[in-house]
Image 1 (tube, rainbow, N blue to C red):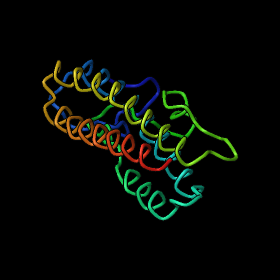
Image 2 (spheres, rainbow, N blue to C red):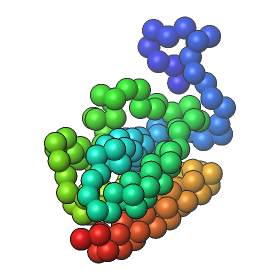
Image 3 (tube, helix red, strand yellow):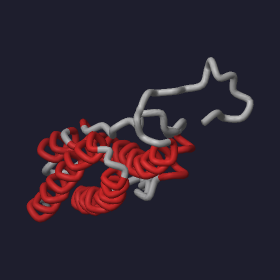
Image 4 (spheres, one colour):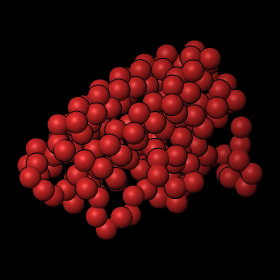
Amino acid sequence: MMAAGIDPRWRLDTPTDLPDAAVREISAALNAFVADAFALYLKIKNFHWHISGPHFATLHSSMSRPSRSSPPPTCFGGTTLRSVGDVARHQSIKDNDAQFVAPNDMLRELMDDNKAMAAPMRRGHAVAEKHADAATAGLLETFIDEAEKRTWFLFEASRTHR
């Protein structure tokens, strides 16, 4: 498949045995997850640096842990996200630009976001399985498991830090 106007010598052609249609479908599914992962990463960093109150040390430290997860790239020839604007067009996680967010509200919002992130990951997993892309399905299983653990952690932390 050649994009219009692109010299074939310079076109990205990552080797894969997946058909072009499968690559496009898997890439589109992953882009939704990757966009949400970037949006959530920025939100976590925002909350991490703006947490305050009596539980500062615990919450500041715990918010640095979830931000270490990085989304999987779509590296098998698919179209990837290209900019912050592209992320914004694909994300379902809502930004939080508030001047102040109470610590417990931060935890609950991050919990809800992590829970919501499982949906695009599960859709991506289903698409990967449909096309027998075991590597992508396996990566997504790991990311789903991590999101569920973070959801549980944030739920418990929000009950503890009131």
